[in-house]
Length: 294
Image 1 (cartoon, rainbow, N blue to C red):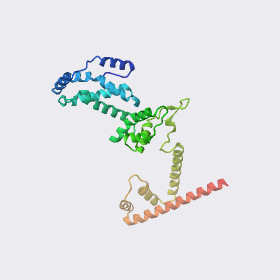
Image 2: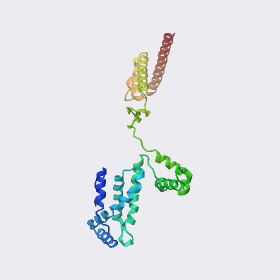
Image 3: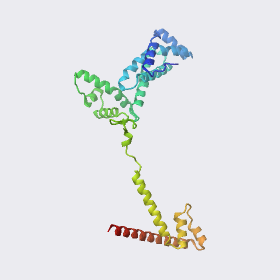
């Protein structure tokens, strides 16, 4: 069942509204006969049921124009809801199709608005969904009753809807916080975007350069300290700490021809000697910097 054509431009929307007005309305008997034929597998009958009620789907769609969604998008969602209603409609229940379909139409429109409103999920509970769609309408009604320049607060809306004032304030805050593109230009010249002012979670370029310099200095100190070890000690450090594949103490003992325990003792001694050498090197660097400063 094809419920609508493209509605992306004003002209196409006008054409669509003109086209659907040509479909005749159905009598109760015609509607029931078509519904029974559709339930028996006659898809052309289902198509007639949809097209005869498209104008009602448009009427419901226009009730949601204040949410800032394109009317054409609302109509398309309404039509999907109408088709779903036709599939579920039981002519033997004694009600008109549109009376049943309006619930499906509203459900599809409201679900679309909630999904389109923000990337942050809204209306996660039934109470929140009800408040989302009742909030603006209730505010308008209260402002109309109060007269010109009337300011309606959250407490008044909460009493009207029988909800907590805190829930009203929270929903107002959610509805007011529409999504904003980080690529949207800002300023009079438009040369900057919001993305330019978002703080990066990573390290700054200055920090990255400082980290690289510090790493280079550390590697240089280690190389200098390693030169103060004897060949066997350097081998132990390289294989036990600096190698890609760490040599086990047993393998180290086999390499030199002594026990695993002896290898462990030599490793401890080599590490201590390396630490002492590094401390001496850093102390000498500090003394040099002090002398330069003086």
